[in-house]
Amino acid sequence: MYAKKIRNIVLELVHGDIVDIKADALVNAANNELWMGAGVAGAIKRAGGAEIEQEAMKKGPITIGSSIETRAGKLACRYIIHAAVMGRDLNTNADYVKKATRSSLELANKLGLVSIAFPALGTGVGAFPIEECAKIMIDEIVDFDMEGDRVIQRVYLVLFSPAAFNVFEKFYRKIKV
Image (cartoon, rainbow, N blue to C red; front, side):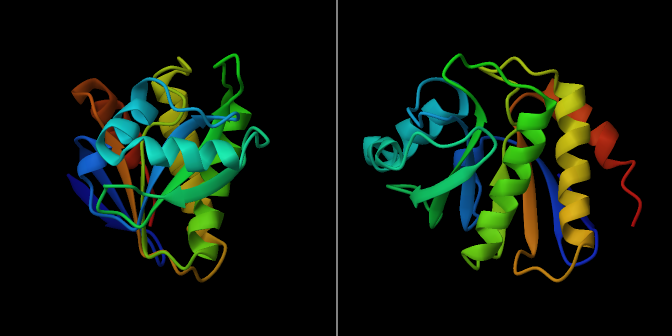
């Protein structure tokens, strides 16, 4: 685990399961229809309950790249932020990853949340390259923090596999503060 203060936000890199993170919100790498199948969505649904998916689907479909919040069911966090990083076809790209990261940060800030935890968006079911994801997400978080004062104080990047953690660590170490 690593922690680095950028401007106002401490960016923390964590190897583990996102459902175990103590944050105000967990980000779900969602499809724009907001049904929860495999990957991070499946883990959140299993740990938090089917009511998360039911509430999300009532708010969908949403534009790819945008985000909505739901209650967190049985999870310890306050919200699940569903970031539509892919469409119904489960394909994603760099633009979708960037927009989904940004919209999640903006929504968390609007909700007055102090902490938010992200998985590697689009790299599981969406099969997006982990190296490109790491660079995009870290750059977007840094840019978001540098743009002005934020309510958010801590952002977790939670990587389930050691290989994904190692890739994110490489880009994390390049952050200039």
